[in-house]
Image 1: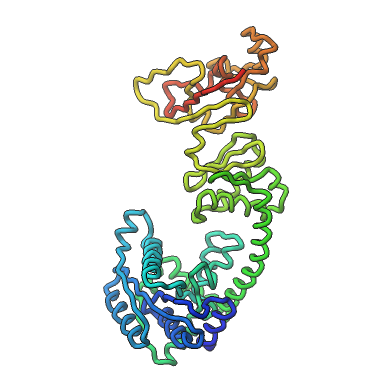
Image 2: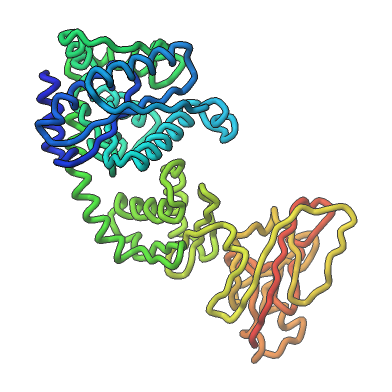
Length: 447
């Protein structure tokens, strides 16, 4: 492969760089970024753009100083502005509870952003290549992925561009050797304790024994998936306008969404979660399946989600919002209430209030609903678990018939824990074995 022409083709076909752009390269000093710097340096006059390079010293290897010195020397040779910054990856990783790989990625991009703002660059070129794409695809497949995982690295993502993405590692190394251009070696790349390194050093070579064009074929597959996914994205954008409602940062996936094809249904759920979270990382297929299953459950059922979110089955679909905001509710039956959960302490005094009750959280949890009583409802009236129909309890307590339908209850399905203003069930009351207490405070009751 002619690396120069491949980079030129990628830039023009994918519209990565335009005349007048100011492009900053992430330059590590390794083979990939040195190859990219060389290719872009030769193209900058032809395509009328300006070029700069930034080296990030992670401080993780004793050779880091040599890498930075070589990167600076190469930029001086090409007459390219050079910038550098040292980041403390280990401290950041420890403070944030991250891997050094993830911490390094975050700090790198923060440094790039700062440099671009200060020095007026509008594009960031990274040296991701075809093997990076193949490795990431295999990694995602091994861990479980959807369609997007088959196109894990794009030629362009906002201001980030990847002109080398169609070029294999083998072609990069051959290009540097033919041109007599030195590069730095990162010895940690041979450490197979890292999953990505294991895929790079063990899995990819085995696949290339099966077919020496394995990496090229995976890149082509990613291109096909990208083209198909663009069509899916257009349709999802259209469906989102119809089936997802937003109010502030709360998202409702409408009940009718379940009638869509399963992939579209689940994709819209994923979109709603990601938008409520303002992030996509850590939203798994299990979370999406759990939210989807709420469509077949009774109103009030809930599931926990990442980023302190909860999804709750409502009458008209599934509401996704901050878990904290579930502390206060109002509904169509003129009941306003709030809840709080807390750990039971010794010497606890249970308040005797008509419209504030305490329950054993581990029994009632937070999946109850407040609604009018129903003729089929049951309530536990004996400590040994004996139940009674609510309509029979009304008779026992001589509640006038014309008043019975006005009573609201705290219930799960047809099991009632509290007929508000009348009686609590016995099964969710506080006992000596209660660890966590759920308080339900009814602020207003209209009768």
